[in-house]
Length: 223
Image (tube, rainbow, N blue to C red; front, top):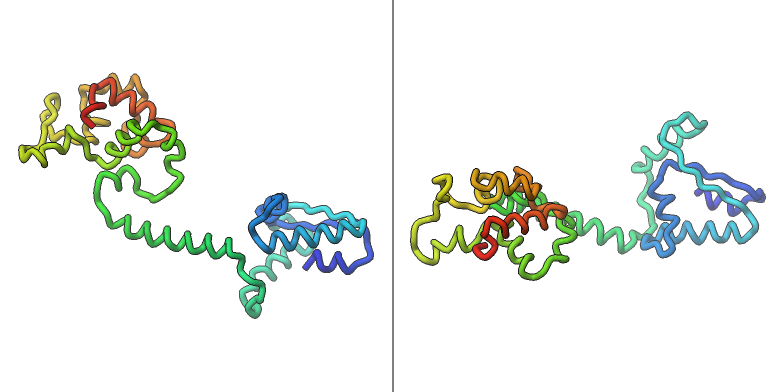
């Protein structure tokens, strides 16, 4: 609306104040994916081409500039206006669809109770951004540890024997016990800076520490 008014005006210098920092940052993009941002960029270009000057200025909400409170009131009442005929950009539809799918997926995931759920209570595709930098062998080890399944802790199922017992602690041998509970590995954990909670162990910055720890306690080939 402000740009349309400027386009039809006879002045040469204009200032537009906005509390939408995200919009200003989007306008700096060379190849915006949002159709509305592209339209705004084109409108600004048309105005500047007529030898006009526009300054876009970011302001926090409610800082006392005359009329700012009124603008906020009008924005809050926007939901009462008739439906807009501006087409929804494909990118927005994709984002909303993805958010909906992730939300439903998370609800189903919340019902699950297993070791991986402890490791990863929230489904987040960016949780391990560096995991693909690992070698295939190391990646397999990390994934088995996350699942809580390994040769040493689960081979008894195939062999039809009793579950393994930790020789040092006289308790059931599990991945969780190996990683954070077994007292026999306390000093080695400190050496490799292994956190004392399962979630933190599998963060990006700790994966190499975890692998080094597993190797030093001679468990690498048993995972």
